[in-house]
Image 1 (cartoon, helix red, strand yellow):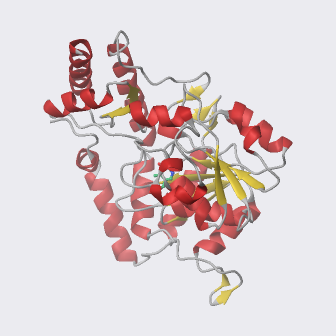
Image 2 (cartoon, helix red, strand yellow):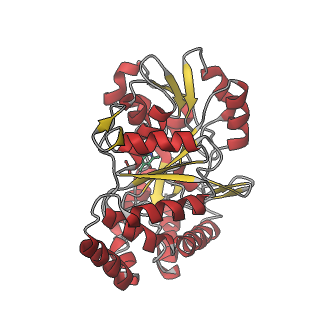
Length: 368
Ligand SMILES: *Cc1c(COP(=O)(O)O)cnc(C)c1O
């Protein structure tokens, strides 16, 4: 059996350090925020090459606070993509604003900058590209359009810890970058977690206040805030794991290269593309095939798990029906949703496992 990811293997590889970190927080009784979270904020900001980081309880909260810190609310529009995890659009709605979608580019499946300008209206207040699967969106093109329209950019970097765009780290190019530490992400907590990074001290200060009940000082609530604080235990665990992230990312990239080399000649499987100047961190390695379901079953028959990221684009989700979209509105996203198939990929995977997955796919591809 080859799992889609193996969090037990990761824990086993760093167990003594993680256990010690947890025990130290238990002893310190700094269970919410505290020194470990503050140290993690500094270390993660360094990792992203930003000045500030504000740790929160989920990636969705980071997106929500980023929007609020930028003053976005009811009546406002935020331009984003429909081919993403639902949280991207949900955060816009939490802020009371309306998500306006731009289709994705067929090669990278990230925001198609060529279509961005047409989605901007007099109500647009921000642009929120998603660094899908661990590959950054075309940030130069997006930033140029954003600056021309005087709009802030929030990077949804929830899948892209350590990804780069011409040498610049995910989260460091837009006004605010948001990351998730959901256990399955490239850097995962042992529970929920998220963070917002920025070079803007004022935005960071607003987000710090908003995550902790809008207090300026204890029990002096100057804005209506939230309980979005990160747990001390998660901060301590994330500090340990952050030290391994570069090694894990390189392992992911090695496995991805091996998949791509092994599947290169395949008649029915299209491979993910790393665009020029990008460091793809392969949160997800998704191939594309019109025969996706058949391939998925063939893998399953061999005990190989796979995933679908994502089978329904947000604009066609029932929960977002009130946005008034229908099939055909975003054809690239819709085609991708029908064809993508995510293969097992995690740092602890072996070359032999990668080869077995690729061989199983190849056999099925030729059989069809
Ligand atoms: C995981 C994810 C989120 C949300 O993060 P949570 O920590 O689960 O709230 C947002 N956007 C994208 C693209 C994600 O993959």
